[in-house]
Amino acid sequence: MNKYIVATIIAITISILPTLTCAAPLTLNQCIQHGLIHNPEIKAYQFSVDEAQQGINEAWGAFLPTLSASYNYNQLSNGNSGERDTDYLDQDSNSFSCRLTQPIFTGLSGVAGLKRARQSREYRTTELRYMQQQLVREISITFYDLLYAQQLSNQWLVSVERLKQQSIIASAWVEQQLAPKLRLLEINVELSNARQQYIQATTKKEVARARLSEWLALDPSQSINIDGTLTEQVVAPCADINDCITQSQQRAELKLAQLNIDMARQDAKMIRARNLPQAQIEASWVDYQRDYDKSSYPNDDRDYYSVTLNLSFTPFQGGRNISAWRKQNIAVDRFHQMQLRQKNAITTEVQTRYQQLIESRARIVNANQTLIAATEAYQFASKSAELGVVSIDDLLNAELRLTRAEISLVDSYHALQQSRVYLDSAVGI
Image (cartoon, rainbow, N blue to C red):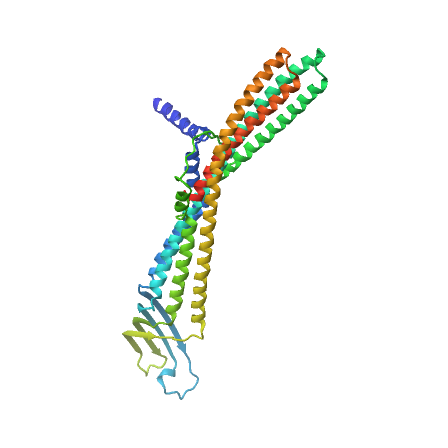
């Protein structure tokens, strides 16, 4: 009986574990690791790398021998009764042959093809790295968007509670005819606006959560909670702007652009190899049998081997090769210009993101100072309103300034985290 109890406990534990894992809050690093493993787009690019590896194996076939086999059956019937040529007498013949062909020289097309296949694999590998970086950026941005929406909804909920308290105070003042009803109506209007902002923030939160689930390839019915804060320390990926620009020159996009140039050059070599001589050795074995309908003629039964050296050379093919070769050289020049444009665009992006990071840090300093002043002003106005020293209008204005200061600080922290993520992406991290 104890064995069955233990087995039941283990089964229940195993069934509960996935739920606990999914319900546990995920940090940013955990989200990134999960996305890199389960995102279907990343998996697709991983398969493309495997395809390119098979392309290398295929390219090796240009250096290896090929083996072919063929069988032929022929039945000949001749209506001329005076036929004397044995090749045209009524007969049945069949032959079976095997041929082994070994390339000796293929105009360097095999070498060029192998290099091209290896470049293709490197391109796919770099492309995979690029897509992984893009996924990390999108997950990070969505992660902080979700934190931002959560913080916004919390701040607007606090504002709603403060306005409710003001509404209670204003109602008491109106009943005692110490304040006009207009002030109560103004507070209720602001309370309604705050509730609307809270609803919008809640909607943004659910949208961000849905997008994060998409990047992580989670089931739509599976809930996701995150563990993080907008106020976490931000560390720049480089010491200064020049260091950032230097690091960005290793970005995957520039590597892809260079590989496009290299592959176009290799294609030009493969085209040029078409005009070079070709050489190969063929070894064959043939088993031939021929049976005449007339028994007066002896049947043939032959078994023989042959070795052949084939040399071919096609120096001119109607100008097609030279035009194709010039076309590839033009493509190389085009890829060069695209690489230069990409390099300039990356430099501009790094400069922009670096300045945005500096701006976001300055905004946080100013937003903190504003929040401190707005908090003191609201506390003073709130106590004064309870004592009847200041008007309800002054209290409402103080609350609105405090709410703006709180939201501004949340916006600043969100902008700081976003600018850091975009700078990391611009640098190539």
